[in-house]
Image (tube, rainbow, N blue to C red; front, side):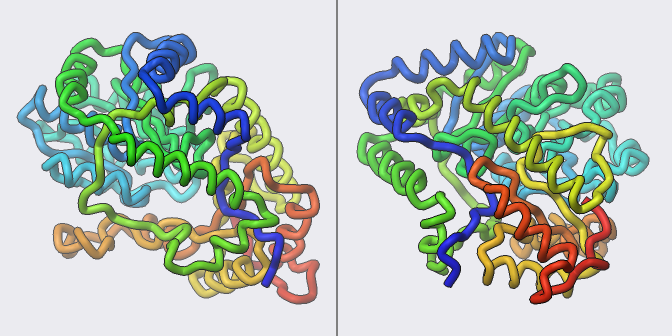
Length: 402
């Protein structure tokens, strides 16, 4: 048993944050305050706070559906399973587009061919915080009356040039789940400058239920436990309990969609300073790894990677590294186990379709932790195992790209 076990992803939650979360249980003041601060931070008129990032996407899609009779939603063939889950729950049709291996963004030559008169929207994803080319997508979509829904669940506070991610498309959303850039345990944010979209969302939002008091207390207790056991000196305990299913990728057939609670909003106090600090640390750690592993720079810039993606030559090597990481507590992890078309619950809808790049990425992708809990010794240990300097496991020729 390795008593220092690095979590693959983590966001800071301090005692002071928990105090503000506890105070937020009573009344709506924390929610009102957070909405105002988010409008100021994002410089948008319309902000909606909900129970999760996938709830935010479902609310957006249900609202766009009210505005149009179209049913097709184009998403990357390799992305978080919550995205196709939300599309299905909204009663819409999933259309997949393969991705480029260098950026994990859409293959734009394929995307252009998929757009037609039945396309409701395109959902580009800033996977791991790597910016998708939203301006290019808007150029393809704007004259066709197709909306761009920006999935910035893994990229809050990130930028493409001087533009904040999540604000470039017609509507964007963020996740506040554990392990994101900043967390309140569970939550989601919707932002848009479109009054038409905002009015449609408002109608759906007004129908959402609030958390019951018992649910809020349960969520607060979970946040307290998370804040304690996320530390590497204690993470070995939850990581060693299989029934917790930590890190398991799930396709949700259903999930709750509620308004964000005052407790969750309270946990977001002073969010801007905390978010900037979290992202600065991620930039530093990502740049350190990329330099040590001699990995090419993505977009030629230092990004606040939520996790640093690393491709190896094949599934066998990936699984060996992942097994070693689990044994040694290194925090290196697999990501989404299949492309979207191979998800067991929906694969019957994609019979005969192949997305070779997405399939290859699912087989070969690992991620390195970049969060605030990494020490210099942790980073050095990770690199020793990856570049073969540690005699216990030599992988020097396996790492091909990050």
